[in-house]
Image 1 (tube, rainbow, N blue to C red):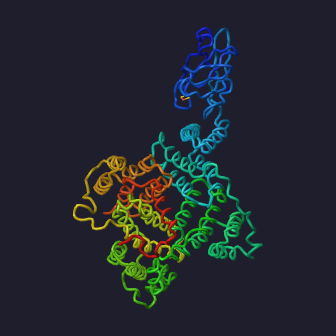
Image 2: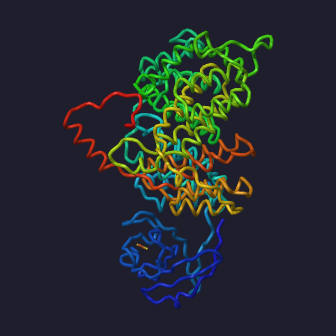
Image 3: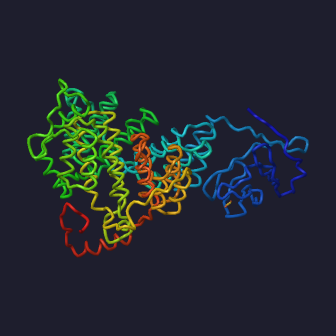
Length: 604
Ligand code: FES
């Protein structure tokens, strides 16, 4: 519907000149040209200066500041990066009338989505932010905005699921921590990271879906075939099958169990495969199951190609202990879920030196937690088996593992990250928390022996990363004393000012509502305290996991430890570029001497 308003008299605009006009929230520039009077928004989309100061020649407006050029009759940008809005003009009795009615949302939304995609393609963060906020302003849910980013990024992800999709998932969740006026910030952060990661990549070729019954005889047989295809690295067949299962309407929980089975057959991709399955299902929960094919099928190449870390020397000691203990995962699952037949404590630990004892009580869990932070692989595995076989609920064991993972982040040697002469750093340790969080999600959704196997991987992971602890911290180092404060903003300030000790001391000493502490952490993660896409992705992922882990631990003492741990990570100075390290690596590569194999990758 039109809404004509009288702006000015034609005579009030200098011939060949311009003047501005304000009406309610509109700021409009009027141009009197030989071709007539034209009206456009007065704010240049480039850096926001007034277009009324620009110059018009042959129907083209040139911004006075940085030369962006716009067709005055349509607003089309001829040089620069974004169109401007123009308004219909009529001259009646020497007066300029402008139709300031906003077009209906359903008319302009498709254009805004097209513009958003173009902004991603141009890596134009400013335009991306503006379009996301314009979409939000006309009532578009942020879930739809992220869904558009997913439709851009998912087909382009070269090797399947990656951090760009995971970050968009977390960022959408994080938007709920912000007030309405700034709730698009994390979403824009996620879209920007996705653009950085996938820009101008061609779509990854995908195999067509197959009919699972025609190929495998039944849906059940097809589901059983999937992990085998992953194990045999038959990526195309596995992806065609998964797409076929989705097309056949196999329920989400069934697909989830199949995927979780495949990703726990090994400790895949340093835990990323499990984390990406968690994020993929979380993303579908948020944007809707209609995107299942686009969101789930890229999981396949990621998990097929993922490094089997359990086959590397890293996990050798742990696997020896695992084989000696021969834990019966089905029995331990029954024990951990209270499903033991006849109420009897099931025997799950075989008959070896790690045979089960009654360690399912809190002291057993404490011993287990200590074995992860300070024990050997044998001790960690033994304590885990004893805790489970002794009747500890799996969720309590996950809690203990999460506390140990938080401790691992609290002990990490920050200097290690800043040393270009090694391959190891913060990201090798933050995954203990994010993997554990993914495992918690998996167990909450699927209490199966397959997922329990993932808990054993988590225990190994937390124990193994102890080699990255700060060494000989001495009396002046170690965990800083808690600094009491009721003000969660102090934690945010400590992160922003790159003071990890202060961040931990303030998070440990925080006395206010937990929600405010969570908000401070999430806000810091959504802002620009990191720049490299890989670091932004891990900051977002770790902060999100820390909040969920903290909530899972309840309100008791130490339950904010995951947040303190993540705050330490966020606040730490970090190596974000790897050019020097890559150069050093290239020198040794050209010498041709392979690296030594060891289960301990950090020299003693
Ligand atoms: S502000 Fe208009 S071109 Fe830069």
